[in-house]
Length: 125
Image: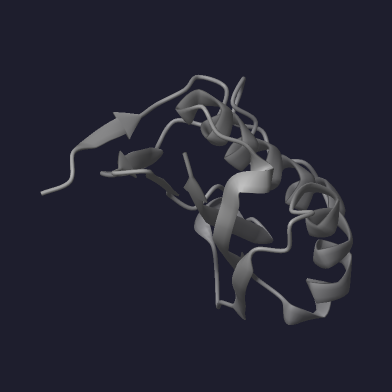
C-alpha cells in the first residue's frame, strides 16, 4: 500500500469544507480544486483573467509546498462557470502549464463563492 501525506500551505486558501488542499500518494501530488480566493484575506478578483491567474497561483503554492512545480503537472481539471470564458482562461492557463499536461475543461452550473473558474492538478513529485 502506498504511503500518503496531507499537504497544507498558508500560501493557498484554506479549505472551505471537509477536505484538504492536497495529498501526496506515492510519487504523485493530487490537489483539490483551487478557486481564485486570495490566501491572505479570501477576496476574489474581478474578471476571468484575474480569477484564472489567482486559481493557478493557488495551485502553484500547493505544488511548491509539496516540492514540485508546474512542469511536473501531468493532469489538470478545469471548471468554468461559462464556457464563453474558454479562450480567455486558456490565455492565462498556457502561461503556467507550459508542458501541456493532459486536461479536462468543463462548464458547470455554479462554483463556490460564485467564482468563474476552479483548477485542480495531479503532479509528479
